[in-house]
Length: 414
Image (cartoon, rainbow, N blue to C red; front, side, top):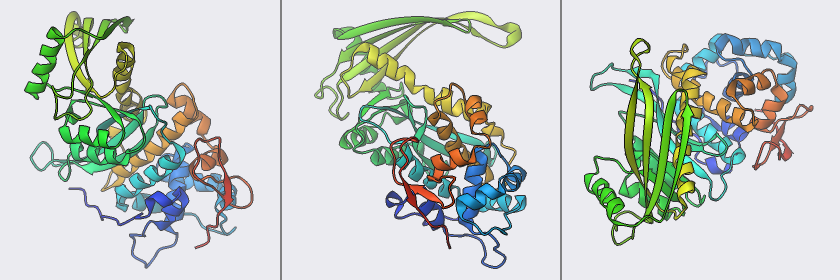
């Protein structure tokens, strides 16, 4: 079981900027023996990790390699002794991982705003390196549920949860409420085809496209019956050949009245997507081409064309390909070598900062973005904290993008 100290951090979260939020984090350490303020350690962890120093000893090297710049940015005493690697390790292991999760939401809310009509995918990802209890009923692990922008590739909000304490459905409902008034289109998988979730989306002035799951037999059978009995409003078809896999996708949309599905708020369309083609299956030594033919149904409150729905539904899976897969494979999240208590979960929160910063740069790949940010303290500190390289620390107000920073003088004195 992962032990956490539930923090009352940031009750004024909506009115804070990232620097104020970091400085408001209550120090969980025993007062005796504290040599470095918690806010300084947290800022070094974020800035160092996002500029290529990933790990405890690398963070200590970061403070040595960039000592003069850090003193100038944070307005520190010239003779300051920076934390050692064991200090970074102790903080990462013991800090409530919900703290960094909330810090990310504050930063993203100010730096990565959503625009009306933007497509937002919601999905959860378990952090395997946090799993305890094996395959028994006592198994527990941490999951991170993210709201991901189809267009920009960054996370605009997230929530962290432990599977024994909360369900992903409940967490998504909270995220949907936090998105109220954004006028976005939320895409989600079949787990979130829930009447309450759909109602919250509509009540918040947003729209949805959600997969219909087969275990909701009445809704699924109704979709199948509607497709056979009602004339289609629009349809489109695309084909592609990629990595030896040939796929043809046919997208057809059908009207559905609120009287037919009164329990599903705002419903306007049922979308049927039929995928046919052939793909390789089996292990490398026994791979064989198999043909497939499958149909999936979706419920939506939008009245788009078939091509718009096809693009939005396929775009939902970018959260798997450009977020979850990248964290697992490129950043090796599920095999995190930094173990112990809350360490894997806290490093996962730091990766959220890293990935969103990377996609802000507009590069084609994550490795390209990481190379660009390596040792770029002044640039990354401006994106994260609004700090400039001038003699006094600078803080930006809420900004619409990384290129529209509005500097204001800010003091770091305790």
